[in-house]
Length: 290
Image (tube, rainbow, N blue to C red; front, side, top):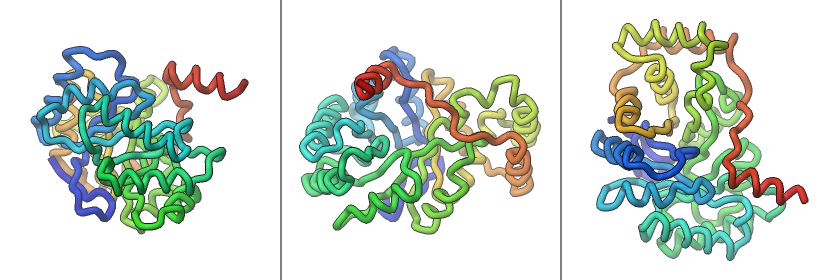
């Protein structure tokens, strides 16, 4: 497994982590998938209070050495709510500290300075090691960073894949310049990459993969982690999926192959795909509209 520094912290995280959004209910296979990934060198697992997967992740990492990232949902961005939400996540995960605590989405209705004051308090109290954000564009990221008084934002988790290239316009170059980690979620475009519409693209990925003895999915993941400051968090619901994900990091694409994928994406790239709404999020969003 290859590791990259998380921001400028000196902390090393695996370039392939595990995402847990939409992972569903607990099963032995899912627990085994996480344990398998950890046994193969993965040390980075991402979850969130809104996913409902913190207890599952907590069970899987018990007695394991893992760097855990979780997120606070937008309706908990007031100072006291951030603190309570973090305490709840720690309890569900069964840990005293998380490695990375992230603001899940921007929330314009709460002063970002109030939210960041609470995030710094969590670091001071030893409940959180590092502060991150998720789904923040460049402007929002800079505003959030400027709202901190003594710590840095070390990461920004956004959708990024061979199909969804939005971060390359402004965000990724900025994060690379500032040495902030981009955590790429939905690295297969929520499965859309493998739909018939994109067969020409996946055929190219498959043909490139033959050179390395890899699948199209593994090439797509390797293309992501070949970028400076980028790590990826695919989902793995079975041990076999975990093995496939991990094996995407044990080779390096030649620059000619990277360029070929880049060129093809000019034809096939699309903006961020409409996010599949988690049932809990759907209910929450409906309540917000009332």
